[in-house]
Length: 118
Image 1 (cartoon, rainbow, N blue to C red):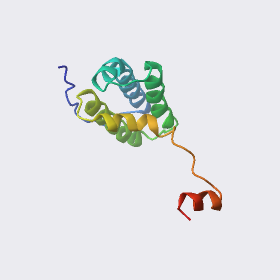
Image 2 (image 1 turned 30 degrees about the horizontal axis):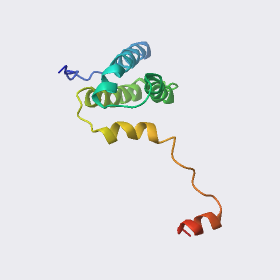
Image 3 (image 1 turned 90 degrees about the horizontal axis):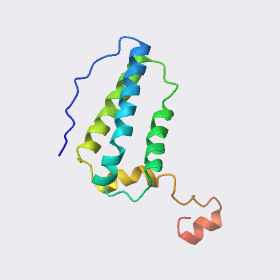
């Protein structure tokens, strides 16, 4: 079984260096999608998984402080290692895809009352 080796953490020297490291991590995530699909038995199209990965990177697109980017890179790399090495369980991975598909909370008092959450 392939195994991702841990990478030594280092500080980015400039914003362009940080950007290069982010793109490298993004490519690693995208290249790992077929393996994730097999290892976690995901019943989703690859396009959905790839879009969710992109959404995670787009969320922090406008961060411009290299130190903050370094912390985000560290966290992203740890998530990648845990996912690639199958250190996560199926529910941990599927949770990323269920967050947007949950039912909306009732906004009216009567709706909450009927559900027993008055």
